[in-house]
Amino acid sequence: MHIPDGILPPYLSIVGYGITGGMTWYSLRQINREKNPQEKIPKASLLTAAFFVSSLIHIPIPPTSIHLILNGLMGIVLGYYAFPAILIGLFFQAVMFQHGGLSTLGINAVIMGIPAIFAYYIFRLKYLLGNKPFFTQVFSFLAGASALGISAAIFIMITITNIPAEIDANTEKNAILASLIGYSIQMLIEGIFTVMLISFLEKVKPEILNL
Amino acid sequence: MENKHKYIFILALILGLNYTQKGLTHGSNIEYIFTKAINIKATYENGDLIKNGQVTVYNPSDPANPWLKGFTNEKGEFIFIPDYSITGNWEVKVRQAGHGNIITIPINQDSVNDSKTETTIKAENEGNNNVKSLNLNNTKYTIQQKLIMAGFGIWGCVGTALYFSRKKAEQ
Image (cartoon, rainbow over all chains, first blue to last red):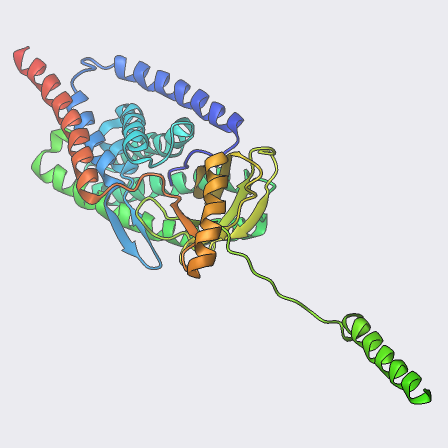
């Protein structure tokens, strides 16, 4: 789901940086409104590390393999801290492992960061129904899976509308649409993984979730 | 004397037919030369092969329009022979499902000379490897290298977490 350098036209990279700049400003503004903005930084740092290494752990799903994104989990646990955390994680992935790219850092942050904020609000919906463990599981699954689903949808929308003229558009479209199967499976895996981790945290250290 | 004219006529006829044989029989010819090709191998970050990925090759004199188009094979490979008269940085792009990579291949005067030398050597040795292989996954780190880099990244994040935790404890 990381778009590498050289795939997108330059104007889109600039637009990506523009949106990311705006989202970073808004996230920092929201963070600054908290009583102690530095309080969640250790938590954000540790989850940034998890996000950073998650791209190296591949789960084989024939004929290809996938890796966890964890943006839903980051959104649930970190709230608005998730966006800058994902941005930093993506930067290190691009610089160290060439996973993604520097010119596409902005657009990749949009693809993975905005759904994380969305997941945060999805998870918060559970408070409307009461603080029962069952609802925690349901909404953590929805948040984890939907964050990945939205990321995949944005990725597909961007890549399918920016196929260069010099390549066979139909072949590329078919390949992109075929990748939806993999993303559907990944949605389920991310959802289940998020449920497992959130349920564990709820039992062991519920203050992490601000429950 | 009459017989002598007869033999000359027959000889002239045979030579004439032989001369026009090429045109009459639609003859074909196959020639071969050894030359240096470039073999591109395209993989994803995790090492998976990019099979049937779309390849576009750009020469330095016209970087806006593809010089060659094609597809990678089942091994993620694509072989092409660049025009060695066009020196500069050639670019090869492989794309599949929004993923892919781009590689720059410098073709300079040394490459041209190298190509000629290679041609001679291979012709003499009935060469079996006149293909220069390049991996399109620009960074082919070993697992150990990746683990060390990941370790440093994690330690950076953990260090940040510890720093801010300490500050909180002091307060």
